[in-house]
Amino acid sequence: MRFHRPYALSEIAERLGLSFRGNPNTALIGLNDTHIAEEGDICFADHSKYVSKALQSPASAVILKPGSPLASFSKALLFATDPFEAFIRLIHMTRDDAYRAGFLGHAPRVHPTARIAEGVQLGKDVTVGEETVIYPGVVIYDNCHIGAHCVIHAGCVIGADAFYFRKRDLEGFDKFVSCGRVVIGNHVELGALCTIDRGVTGDTFIGDHTKLDDHVHIGHDVRVGRRVLMAAQCGIAGFCVIEDDVILWGQVGVTKEVRIGAGAQVLARSGVMNDLAPGGRYLGNPAVEALKKHREIIFRSRLQEVFKKLGL
Image 1 (cartoon, one colour):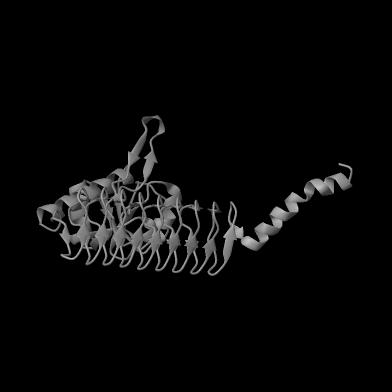
Image 2: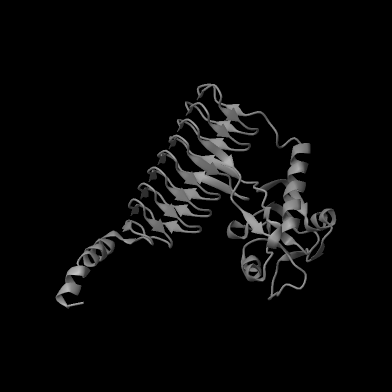
């Protein structure tokens, strides 16, 4: 998420009521999850196992608990007893500022050649490109971009909140405020009842000429390349990267933070647990090279015959 203007470290600390360490004039231009933080961003770490990753990220500032284990660092630091809660307050603060300054809250911008069916719901700050067709029952939440020459079939939901919660012992869960976007390229087609969640702090992105079948779910901060095909009931978890020309057949599930290389094919009902190399064909749960999996299936089918010969 990019701020509508730069914020000095000292201003954020003062408005959130936090102590800080570092140059008070450090300019911060956005906030991001540690996975995708860039220079100029502020991120947070609310558990000791994430502190090292946050400090080693490109982020310019990190919100940490007081007494966090600190190695040598060159980042600005802010200290909060609950960094998660402080980060949520920062999101609300900067978004409220952007609304008051007139940077957010505008009516949707729909190209005159786009065809929008009756009953479609478009949120604020939505853009829809030329010649795009959107069928009945589609809901597009605030701050999403739909490219040109797209087709979005009935019942799709684009830009719903990320599935991102923090467990709070017996008190339930704290919900992360999703402040990213969904950005859909040109010539994309979404089948009926597809769901695409907005990024937690960045963008969920669908590349040009990609086609999704019915009932496909794309999680937060996923980046789908160009000319990707996904058959019905595929599910992609957060922070995955699906490179160009990948094919996922029906009911493929992909766990979080996985990269599937360009041109790879994953056969139906497979579960992707680890990165997959470009150009391969994969099968199984966990997915492995399809040829290897086929051999395994053949060997298993012959085990009973082998046991009989061995008198077992």
